Length: 265
Figure 1 (tube, rainbow, N blue to C red):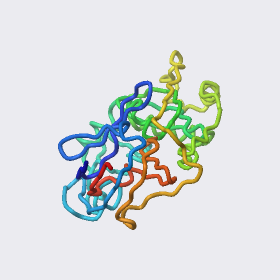
Figure 2: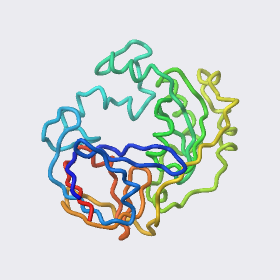
Figure 3: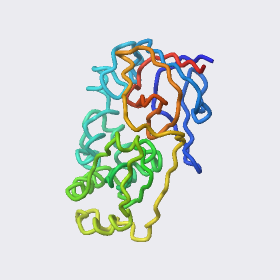
Figure 4: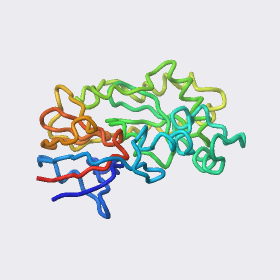
């Protein structure tokens, strides 16, 4: 079977095991059903996810012009502490920025390689954790806007990592740190403005299991722009990565905006 599509990040559903779906044409692929099957990926070109033009992708599925003009990729996306909509100050598009920034956000701890702190909109729990390949996650605070979440993350990352080692995550080399214990230790470092939002009665850990038959011992990252065609047997899916039998890994999200042909053999 063969499918043509412009790559977008895989959609997910948290069940006993994460279910993965990939948009293709006017349909979707249930990727869990493709485990142990041979898949060919063929690079055909680019299509910006913002303007829809066939222009080279710069970052995050956007062409150069859209990346530096679209409100959807302002600096506050990666650095929530730069959010200004709560002060009625525009970055690129105030209406859009208010719609995203002025809603409940969660600051959390996740265990994907080591313990890390992160920020996400409440509506993106647990999607954000799955996209990072976290095996466990726990919420710390729920704040009413992105700015408060950002300054909380900045304060906490002085005491805990804010990055995942993606290689260790894909190899399933996960630390055994206690998230509840880590949360309690970090409570004292919350900014004053965030302290009233500490989730004192929510110490629940979310555990996440991924559809992986075989974890790679070494990692070889697939660059479709250079190789153009790749074929391999799918052995697992974790985070936004496809894991293949020959230790090749493919980050779907990092290749958003690429037009590809997917052949299931």
